[in-house]
Image 1 (cartoon, rainbow, N blue to C red):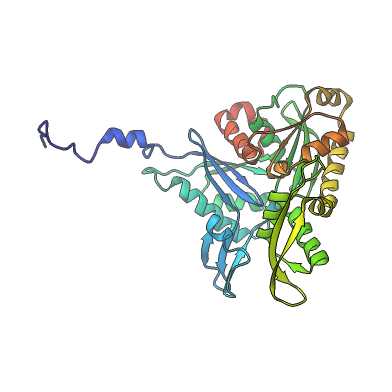
Image 2: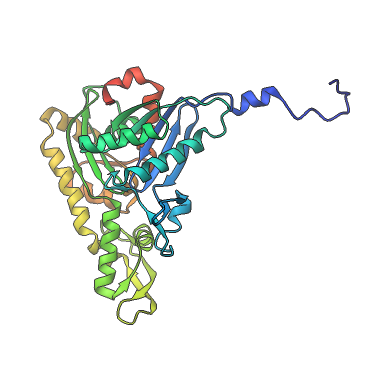
Amino acid sequence: MFQGPNEAPSRWNPLRWFDSGRLVPVNDIGVDLGTANTLVYVKGEGIVLNEPSVVAVMRGSRRIMGIGLEAKRMLGRTPENIEAVRPMKDGVIADVDVVEMMLRHFLKQVTAKRIFRIKPRVVVGVPSGITELERRAVRSSAMAAGAKAVYMVAEPMAAAIGVGLPVETPTGNMVIDIGGGTTEIAVIALSGIVSNASIRVGGDELDSSIVTFLRKNYNLLIGEPTAEAIKIQVGSAFDYGEEREMDVKGRDLVSGIPKTVLVHSQEIRECIQEPIQAIVEAVRRALEMTPPELASDIVDRGIVMTGGGALLRGLDLLLQHETNLPIHVDEEPLTCVVRGAGRILDDIPKYRSVLTT
């Protein structure tokens, strides 16, 4: 229909559709399926989703009540008929059916706005110490969620690529990836992991240490979200001269009445020493297994820390004190693995050797 100069332009503009990206199908997706958070990267767009790995389901019927942030808000607050679960435990799948529902929901969210939909290729970051059975669970969950092909990459390798380390060169690069359920330490050279240590200790272990400490010392019962808030606000791994304190609300185990106690950062530092020392020991173990030529590279280049656990105050100073090596913390440690998966998708021929199908 002809429009005069003063008439409003028609609503439909084909150029706008092209610019919006809705006509471009999503065919390559990177996923960091973490114990605490799931991140999704779309080729050409970057990180499009970052949600907690939590699902709220109805008991009995297993009907989904909420996924991601919505479900995390329900942790420790649900009535009897609803259960908020974390289907990832220690970096691997604990409940295959729930993970499948969660992945399907996230992938649908990413592809929902597109007009043309095709099954995407998916690169998933997995712990380096994963068993064959756990590997199969990851693959079947991603395939059931709508993937055309599933490739897996070890999390420390993906983190190293995400940080921008030259993993394909003969130079030694060391990465410590501290997640919610696992800590992955790897020395990488020539697109392979030369020596590694993978332990099932991470942020969740620190949270449970805080819960136990408050129960024993203050007769105070708190939930996981409160323990995580304490760790973020006053938690530290090393005494670097700045002490903090915070009020913690919970239930008194003796009287059963809610109460508030004041906790100091020094107490929290002492109560999380056991899992912190386990991480330090794993770093030492990986260094002991490193060939001398690569060890000399690490002396020059230092160690890169990634993952949410790298945000714990003073942890880099503690590791520097224990190993006498320079420690570098990435600017965005939470997104290193998914950024690495994205870089792999951008140049699959270059990184073909780091992927397993």
